[in-house]
Figure 1 (cartoon, rainbow, N blue to C red):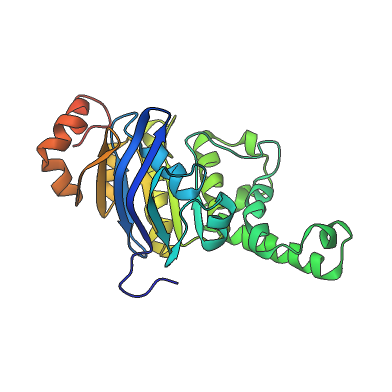
Figure 2 (cartoon, helix red, strand yellow):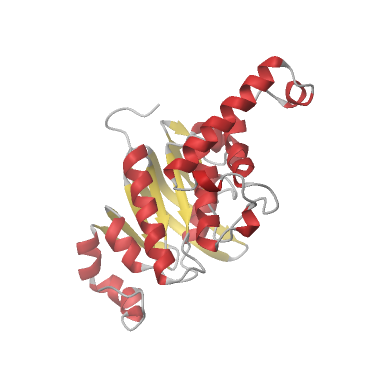
Length: 266
């Protein structure tokens, strides 16, 4: 477990090569318990690669990753999930033909399921476990404002609510750290604003540490306590939202390109 002075997540010198291409070079990142951190940068700067390395989808070419006081460099995704690390993806990955509550229950089964055979054979302990999982799933959906849609088929939900179901499934794994990879992709401004408020609310109410990769600068600047900027696979700058907005390197590399867009800084 992390000590009082040790970050929840500590990344040192993280590097990833794809053949002769260096996608990420010497990334350093620290996230404290309960902190909401934004990770931004131009397309192709290495943000999603960093997420894939942190969560174990990819193995790093160099560097170290420590989570909750343990070296997790090269861990498989399921190992990191058991330790309390969860993520979402740019493209929604849900069981679209199943009810909302079943999608959320998948996350809970990792920690509270009775196991395959007891469930199939309907042992009493499995029946009790399933009832508890359903109740906990409803509690998680309540946090996301979706309890009344628990029995609806996911495919029938609006896109923004499908994103929230994905959040609920990740939260159901009881993480200490949640990594959100461009959650507002494909959303209109109203949906994006609602999603940003949802992230801020469950971050505040559940006390989770959150790392948010996002292109919508209004969401990032409004809700993140600290921001790190990647450019061409390297860390360019880090600081408070106010500091990042004033940093001439960031303006040149990223923010300055978006001043005329709907999601530019106010």
